Image (cartoon, rainbow, N blue to C red; front, side, top):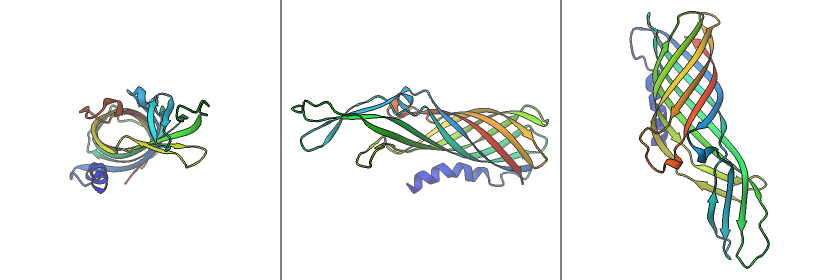
Length: 233
């Protein structure tokens, strides 16, 4: 677990090191916003899960239609290094994304029981931590600054947990914790409030896995939209 965490935070740590003596400004920012699941019908489809139970109350998964992770939320910590007289900047960030879904579960009892099962309300939970280092390009040097960005991403994807809403008697875990390597493409708009403070909005498409390892149903890409505030040190 420690090695997985190290892989996530290392790019961010490297990005906030004094990488060049020509650095003009160093900005630290924090942001929050929404995260949309894209490119995976399994993650954002309606959650319905069913099990078959034997006489010893052991459960066997029959069907799982989706996880109901259409929209989540995220918080972002970002550092930015602006170079002298250049529209380019190096950035590093850590992005924590959290998803919650709701659905129903049914458990079929042994076949000799003719009573149909009652549906049980359940919720699903899932987290992604992205560590991103890359380049930002400012299109204008005015009070309002549109920009483009691109970076390399190391992502930690948690297990998916499905639990009963009404009580804690049911817990089901699927998919392993895993590290994925990908890329990000983004665009945004900043506004200078003063020489030290700027606010902005940013949208970023994150491809968590560019190598297509494992079951493709397990892979997930996200689109983040955030509001930021930056302070120049």
